Image (cartoon, rainbow, N blue to C red):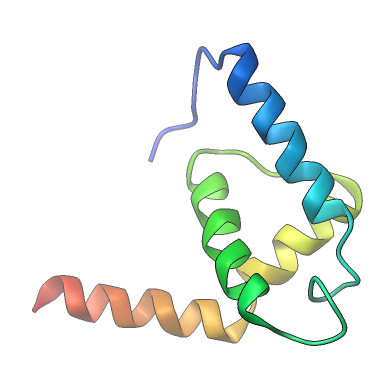
Length: 85
């Protein structure tokens, strides 16, 4: 996907909220260990990156952690197989 362009104020506020949430992660997961929260946020991290949005600092570390999480990688591969079915 192409990077987002012409992002409005409402989107920027929401993006800031997500960055704040990601920045509160314990690392490498949101809490002490992997949970459903990370499953949810890993998809969000993936979608944001597909639009060219990556965070800096601790929020960026969490996003990178989610993007390299084997569970997400397996889900993406499964989705590719399912899409081809």
